[in-house]
Length: 416
Image 1 (cartoon, rainbow, N blue to C red):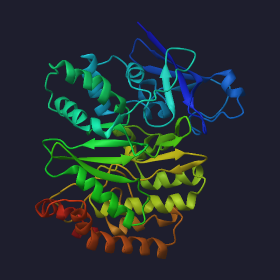
Image 2 (image 1 turned 180 degrees about the vertical axis):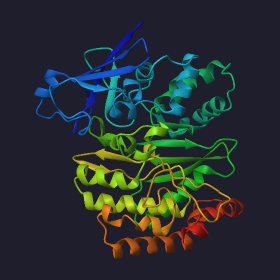
Image 3 (image 1 turned 90 degrees about the horizontal axis):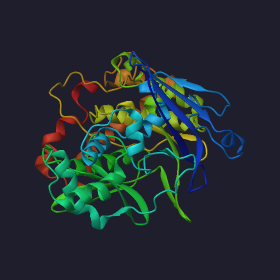
Image 4 (image 1 turned 60 degrees about the vertical axis):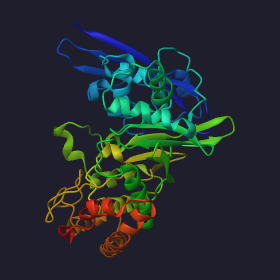
């Protein structure tokens, strides 16, 4: 037997706050369980002089039928708008069952997903939601998130209501850690919660890493930490939203996974590469030299702080006018026993994923950097990370004992 699902794809165009219909997505599953996705732009959308491509590489503006056999029939730009682990978890908890298809997850996630896309069954795009959680809701959000993480039954009517009304608006941002979208200081922020099983205060560590990355010349979003019920909650300002008269502008966003034409399958891991991402930025970015240098700094920083969670969904490009590398996000440290070799999630040079200075410098030209400039950047980052990491962590409130726990993550011996 074969099955067929279809939905309309909406977009908020640059300078607007309202969705319009961009096209139609159809996913057909064959008797052999192969999923084939087909997308067509609407004729009225193509005729709109302000129309923009959902993805300039995979879905350029054209009157044709685009086909995808990857990602269960989803195109990369649409997969990026689909909920990741945390979002799926609370959708399933809310509906009390797993969903049968990728399109079902798209249709059951809220319209405030990352980027500028929306999905629905109606030809006409719905109006965007205008209400968001506020910091006063954070204790309720945290309680609901903890119940989901701990897999506790939502027996309380009020708690179940919190899951529906408070947590669900943040289900499409990706990642495994609990989070929600809130309105704070008139802008939209992501609230990221700690888990009871964390070995250290992750909210404080990520806040400290963002400060440290900023000191290394890396583009970072504003962040702050507030205490809720005795626990730290990290607030990170969304860079794909911008306050304007009448609501929020939504900027298009593509993950590096999509830009690289890759997915999470092991057979595609050869595409997980900073070097290949730099090549794509040279073609896609409106300021390729600046973005390639930023990517190089980010790659070196991740190696110096042992951030092994630097997979391609934790990098992105964003379009306000033209495409640019997004600010850095989802920074973390990993405490590892090895002092000789540590690997990043993405290849970074001639020696593959080896987080080593020599390897980072081996492909400097692909990042549009001279050998001397690349060497100077790495040396400067070594100095900042080596001498400032503890100051950055202590300045955000991390305890001395927690600093001692993560100390081996920074400038490990094998890096040099």
